[in-house]
Amino acid sequence: MDILKRLQEHCRNIPEQPAIVSETEQLNYRQLEEYSNALASYLTASYGKSKEPIVVYGHKNVFMIVCFLACVKAGRGYCPIDVSVPAERAAAIINEARPSVVLMPENAKFMAGESETINLSQIQAICREGDAGPDADAWVKDGDTFYIIFTSGSSGTPKGVKISLGCLNHFLDWAVELGIPSKEKRGSTFLNQAPFSFDLSVMDLYTCLACGGTLWVMTKEVQGDYQKMFRLMEDSDVKVWVSTPSFADVCLADQKFAQRLLPSLRVFLFCGETLTNRTALQLQERFPKAVIVNTYGPTESTVALTEVKVDRELAVNENPLPVGRVKRGSAIEIWDEQGKAMPDGESGEIILMGDTVSTGYHQREELSRKSFFMCRRNDEVLRGYHTGDSGYLKNGMLYYLGRLDRQIKLHGYRIELDDIEQNLLRLDRVKSAVVTTNERDEKITGLTAHIVYDRKVEDGRQEARRMKEELKEFLPQYMIPKKIRFLDSIPMTANGKVDRKMLQGAVR
Image (cartoon, rainbow, N blue to C red; front, side):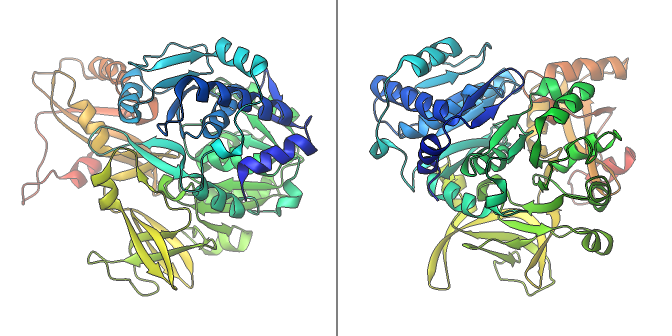
């Protein structure tokens, strides 16, 4: 598939079909094509034919998608930053991406450094008054970067995962058939729950556009008002649900979340974190007409590359649930610490290979060499990636066991605990900081920071509140520890390492 040519076809064949719909605005396929062409032409004329990425800053505005497509039609990858990202972290991403221009399809303040900015009113004027735009020769090519999504880095600096047009197209060849056939998804409404700076959104956004569907975007404000969210859901006619399992859990807490609320819903697509048996069984009871699909894959694999339909038999008999079989064009092996492939049933590091593996990290050659490699399998040369995830294969089915290092998934977000610790140590009073996970029923529910101050803490609760407010300058909300404990010293093991097990046990 070629997603950009597919969109051209939609513009010709279904021009008035709504492509992107929010609570307050919408764009059809004709507008999406014409507006992105006009903006692409402006970008090329104003900033030349450089391959450097363009940052797009905003949150769920329908013109964000116009900006994404305009960037790649101008021959450049785009880098999305959501408005919820703290200013200092956004500045770190700007420093890594080094864009000459930042598109801002949102009325929000943003420190773009030395980069030029184009705001919403300017974007709208260009789209509605510009010319037809560059022809297909100017578009990003198969091996060019289509988007860059920044994830948490162990040094405290986020790292940008580059995904090429070829990776995205191969992913879409597979993703359009997930759960139900692509022909049944044509013209359907897809739920967009994740922000566009989170790679899960790629599964709903581009799968929807490839199918000629309507993307129903849900803002963070709507997600924070459950009564309003359910009212809007009732009118949405959503057929394909894409989210983290945690978001489904939030919805399941309300008895209204059932087939009667969403009579058209036919498939749940889950990625980003562990799907529990309890969640799967509840969904099967509430939505008897829907298929549940569990998938797995890090950002570096272009969202996901395994799938399994979770029926009642699987949900009752398999605990934990498997994450699926690998898609065509990809392969999975389990390696030990020496890089030797492990036999069926034995655990080790999950190694991914195939046509959707990232081309590397933006401006991080050393880290790319460490994480990515080339290999030959079945007379094909494939890109490979060290996930750092633990798992095992059983008759071709992959089972995920967790992180080999200290990287975790919380509410669908990939987080490196070292990242949080590095930022805690930036606070003046902090001498030592260790972050551990809070768990219930073998699921991570939050984070605890164990802090040693350079002075005595008189009021721990007040100090914890103040620290959380300070952390908002450096970290997004989902990375700020729920609990903060003040200690006189950090416990150590006999070999001189931090005793994380003791710390974690202290908060249970």
